[in-house]
Amino acid sequence: MTTLQLDHVSRWFGNVVAVNDITMTVGPGVTGLLGPNGAGKSTLLNMMGGFLAPSTGTVTLDGKAVWRNEEIYRQIGVVPEREAMYDFLTGREFVVANAELHGLGPKAAARALATVEMEYAQDRKISTYSKGMRQRVKMASALVHDPSLLLLDEPFNGMDPRQRMQLMELLRRMGDEGRTVLFSSHILEEVEQLARHIEVIVAGRHAASGDFRRIRRLMTDRPHRYLVRSSDDRALAAALIADPSTSGIEVDHTEGALRVQAVDFARFTTLLPRVARDHGIRLLTVSPSDESLESVFSYLVAA
Image (cartoon, rainbow, N blue to C red; front, side):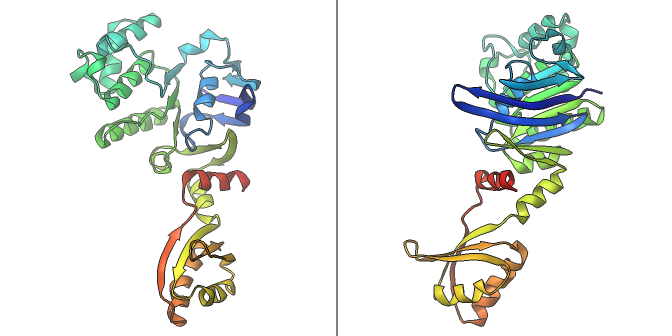
């Protein structure tokens, strides 16, 4: 049973703090590392894989330090986001080369290619591959030595729906077998479909941890902000502010609209049309103004 432990890990580059005091444990099963682009996920994965030293803190695999410990690569398989491949090789040659680095031969490479369903294109040059095919060959090279820990950085990028489903099923099966699988993504729905456990990273900080249902509930229950245009903004504001589902309303004269903060999402969504009907007010526009991933995740940091 492979366990990865991070203890107060930080990493900075000059004056830029990429990862800030993160402590977490990643155990058997599938864990999703969720966060917006630029959150520090890749830096964190590089430290977990032993490719980057923490500025402070420690990363250990089953109690052994990861940094400058080449023995860990018998247990770790890594699928980086960056396209660092030898395009002049065929898919099979690329995976065989990785197998040989582990003291293995063509049989191990053939098994890994079959696992990711790439036999049909294994004799084509990588330069002819689509991004999704490249992702699967990288996956094969990571699996060639049958690792107990898999670290995957945005593994579904560039995959078509069929390829995505195949890889999800493969990772789900590996998690069920007792392997430790950690994959990063900036797409919540992607993580929900696959991960039993989620770690959320925002701006280099550990924002939330737990079952995806709990994380989804945190996101849904946060205050929501809306831009509302109506036939009578002042009358609408007066009626809405009296209800406990709203915590603040301001008139935006530039936009010619109301900016409403709702603290009870479910109640507000039924309140607004009812108030408008009862007061004879026409709703012209109702749009969320804080639905970007960055704003959602930022709320989790403060929660």
